Image (cartoon, rainbow, N blue to C red; front, side):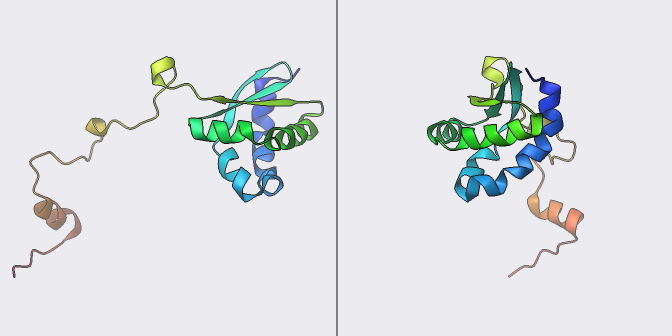
Length: 127
């Protein structure tokens, strides 16, 4: 069995070492994966979107390639599974930005031309 801490330690080497092994198309999907959990000797990698999850699960080569590289780095046989990352609706966290809480957000009544003049030194040119 491996621990989540062990996975986190080898993740940079695992992630970086897979780019050439997976190829451009597979890498485009895999680079969205992040360590989510460990169950025994199975690494659970999470992705945020159904499209990426479906693409990773349907490609018969991705999991074996990741598994082989992870097994080398962790010193034992490792399996790999992909799962959808939980979102706010099912108890996860929401990483989106609340625009209302940004400090430098101009008010709704701010004139864009005035804002450009004050912030960027723009000049209003009349035709």
